[in-house]
Image (tube, rainbow, N blue to C red; front, side, top):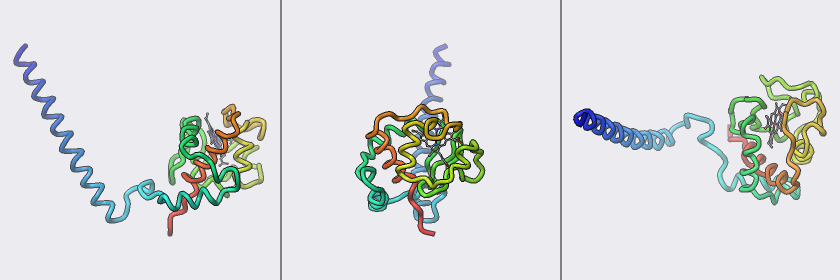
Length: 171
Ligand code: HEC
């Protein structure tokens, strides 16, 4: 019994050491690959300056949105939406590049007819109405989300979405 216990302990220590070495080398790997072309699109996001410019491009009051609160509110959307460039569609479509995009037009995603035929491009004002109550704004939508009643929370979330989804990397 005692021997078995010792063996286990040794194995656990070996595993811990291995894990240690692993995280060290993967750090090195990511530093090294940072110099070349990034492996994932997500690796290269907007700089602080670019984020500021994206925010400033919004009309008032969205351009003064609180990004930290917006990020917290995005927790309401995360179960159904990704916002990173090239992120997968889940229950809802990936939202990267949603500002200026025609509603219901992301290739490869099956929208409800009402969203597909909405006939407008997403901007802060449309997003505000939508997020206030999707089913009031577009009856028949399959986005089963009640809405965000608090106006400031919507403003902050829209500011956050703009900064996170609006960056166009140089080609
Ligand atoms: C329960 C899942 C779910 C949640 C939660 C959810 N959505 Fe959606 N969302 C959807 C679905 C499904 C659609 C497609 C709607 C349709 O086709 O009728 C959609 C569509 C959208 C669209 C339109 C996209 C386009 O390409 O036209 C936007 C914008 C959007 N959601 C934003 C949000 C935001 C922001 C939140 C968080 C506050 C949120 N959604 C929460 C499921 C969800």
